Length: 521
Image 1 (cartoon, rainbow, N blue to C red):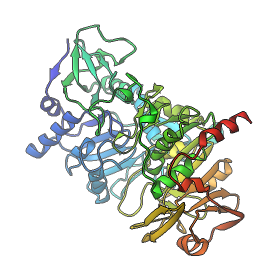
Image 2 (cartoon, rainbow, N blue to C red; image 1 turned 180 degrees about the vertical axis):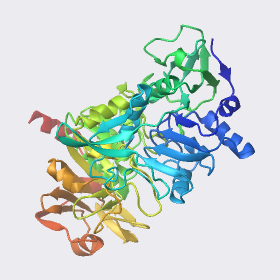
Image 3 (cartoon, rainbow, N blue to C red; image 1 turned 60 degrees about the horizontal axis):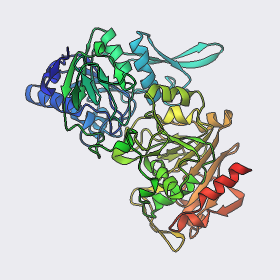
Image 4 (cartoon, rainbow, N blue to C red; image 1 turned 90 degrees about the horizontal axis):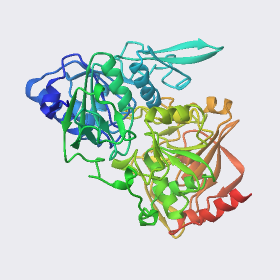
């Protein structure tokens, strides 16, 4: 019989020094009421303390909600996370050395959940070699306080691999849609299913406590077995929250979980800004039949372009959260999609990514150097971490990085089919050497990856000799607006050309006809 408890009762089950695993992905799947109750308990009693927190990727709404609730010195002693960009208070504590912080690739974190469930010592993978995950660089440690090595280089079958050690979780906070009277958990209204099953198995097999937040209780045995994601014998307690939101922006949208489908024509095109220009130029890199991953930032705006161009069904757009098909969302709904064709558990998505299944991936950049190295993980006071970036960039066949050429106050307008730079950014993004190697350009060249960098005013490619400038935007001056804003001297292609003028004018660009013609050829 189900053990139904309040969020406060759930929070009271956490003990000092517990290893707490929290489910959720970006803006969806977080057991919000339980996390809020745990924060209130700590603020009221200064207990529990010295917890180790394990989360696969960023969970929160940047400065509030999700794991932002747990960003208190003393409450958390050590954290393992795939990304911290959606929980800035955590980032601040790590930067200030108030807790130990580990950042492993999101796919590795997801696969560690399965390893923990099977009581395996960790995950062996090629993902992270020659980046800051490599212990010969930083080993995924985020500050000086974090000393214990948790990543090792090992040699198997005549090649190098990285071995990521797994912690042992003792309590889990998870989330579903429905619980029956025996505690079986279904996720029919969830926009992602994540790795909640593996986390529940890991904690149960370690003799710990599994707590799941749901929005409704149903009669024993009435849940469809295909909808059940966590068997009842793995669940110790259930917390009922009837007004549980699907994402941090949406109470419930049935098109995000497959219950209904919405016409893509109903999606309103984004305004024609410099960011929209970058997303449109990136969309020009799509090919019929592509299986694509879309990252955060500007890359997450590409689905809106695909919707306007009516090309969303010519290729398959995916998100690392496990969503396949449809039109992915962004901002507080990143990780979900309108009209998904499938919603996989996240570890399976990363198995496919790590095996080289992606034909193309679209990602952001914060810093780029002359070798094509990219930093998206640590810059200024940002300690974002990798998320799925390293899994994706080390394995996709083609890569398209998107971002503004300069940052910090850049003011650009798109008018009359041209780019008008009204105020240049205060700092360069194309620099002599990146602050942290999130993507290794030389390693990519060795593996024969096709790599493109797109900004609002210029397009570059990685060639054997390094970064090459191939296109500039209408209205942009080559020397003053491009070369003088780069911290090194890139090679300029002898065939330098203007970016497609359609990108800079409102209305559909006609990509569908071009893609279909490309497919016919």
